Amino acid sequence: MKAFTVLIVDDVPDNIDVLRRVLVPLDCKVSVAISAERALSILEQITPDLILLDVMMPGMSGFDLCSILRKDTRFYEIPIIFVTGRTDDISQGFAVGGNDYITKPINADEVIARVKHHQERYQLLLQLRSLNNELEDRVRQRTAELVSTNKLLREEINERRYMQDRLKYLAEHDFVSRTHNRKALERNIVEIISQPTENFKPAFYIAIDLARFRVVNESCGLIAGDELLSEAAEMISLVAGSNAFVARLSGDSFSVICPTDNIEHVSSIASQLHTEFAEFTFNWDGRHFDIGATLAVVKIDQSITSFDQVLMMADEVMYNAKRDGEQSVRYFSDLEEQASRQNTRQNWALRLIDALKYDHFRVYFQQICPLSGCVDGIHLEALIRLYDPDNDCLIFPDNFLFAAERYQLIADIDRWVIRKVCEFLSTHPRQQQRIKQVAINLSATTLRDPHLADYIQDSLEKYAVSPSKLCFEVTETEQIIHVNKTSSILEQIKQLGCSIAIDDFGSGYSSFSYLRDFPFDHIKIDGIFAREIEHSEASLAMVQSIVDVAKKLNKPCVVEFVENQTLADRYKSMGIEWGQGYHFHKPEPLNEENLERCLSRKPACEESL
Image 1: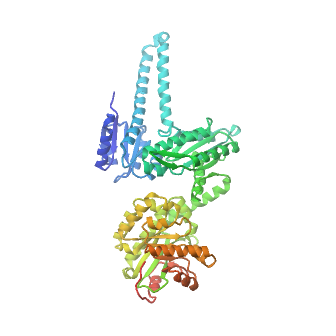
Image 2: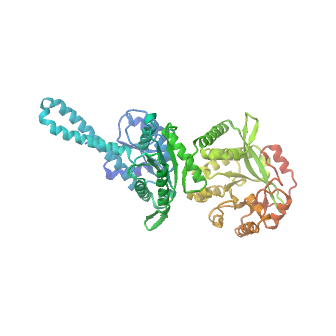
């Protein structure tokens, strides 16, 4: 029997060596390619039974190679397992035709388990082909002996059917959860929406996102994560019942199709699932994790035209629930209203894409001023506006940032601001010398980018800007505080020589432990929260406690929305060092003339954040 052949495609020799050693117990024949282009050349000479494909490579990426192979009938059926260190790559890998994924750093048990799965599928395929060939030969040879050989043929046909059924099962089921996979889910939904109008039977789609799968996966390992998915799938199947169709969509996302138009019945299932997950504790190696879930319910009626539309509607509901910080059950109830909002956001997304392409964004700035003493030079915050060429007007960020976050454009916008600020400082060296620091806001999405610090460093070096000139403001949100990688990324930025500020402190998830655990240099107190000190003794005490703790930690404070001298004096008396607001400076375009006007104000003693 032909040896099981694996083609490893990776530009890092050490990764290839690790995978070679891991595959030794499986008795595979291994070929290697150090680039996607070399892999295409090798595939003209051999046809492997499995491809282990790295994502990030010079030149052609793993995603591009996978897309090419899926369009070539010679290689369409070859299983492709992506090898990646980024969880964000997983969904894109499935979208371009990948069959599975292995995460970096490479775990030998995971590699063996996943390769064995595809090796078993390969052996079944070989057996099926062999049986097909043998069956065809015997039919031709024994046509004259049909009566005497019927029993034998029936047995062989049954065996062939068994192999076909087994292959179909493997093709439509998820290896980890043993539920249906995305391919089977799509087929099921397409069958529902393709029913004749006169006999149409509606159904309900329930999307389920586990709340803490990533925590388990990252703290206990992939095997623990797989076990959690398996237990979750068993719970979902039990609650949903035998008539429901259960599938794992991707990652920590499951789907349930209930073949009924009885909303009360579906609501009962969704509520029970929510309760079960709220009470579910996952135990692993002496550790205990409370696993919650968010559920979105969508009715599949005759207004639905595609599988993607169902996912889009469920994603809309799920996104809103998660944005509000809820683990709840939500329903897609008002289709026209929801569709209108979604179309509006999609239109914004297209406008933002054009704005990035045609440079329609504008950088504004607002001065940050000392409440006592004075400084030699100025501190600024960079602000963004969107220029609308059709109406010749500027649009404030409140109108478009939600769409930017929703359609994953916010990181590109943040990078645009970083580049433009560095470019301005580079082209105005005299002004750069007198600017102490420019504050730039970073979103939660941007802070999940492992290459952010590299981009900042490249921009600083390209435009010859001192790292001390930049301060990155991180808004105090749950998404920031609870992302494990945030602290390490902030540390990388700090190591470049830039400063870090926590923005809008006091507005939502305030905890003094954040000031201790995260590498912030100073604190910006939320202006709306701070203004309440005029009417609330409790707010006064809270703001004063923030200032007192900040002084103990040697972290200066900035207060926002200072609108008059009375507020400025009050904040000064509380020990707040810096103020920002219309009382000092109204935002204006970042250009040489406006900056010179700020710089021309009377300088005095030096003081810095």
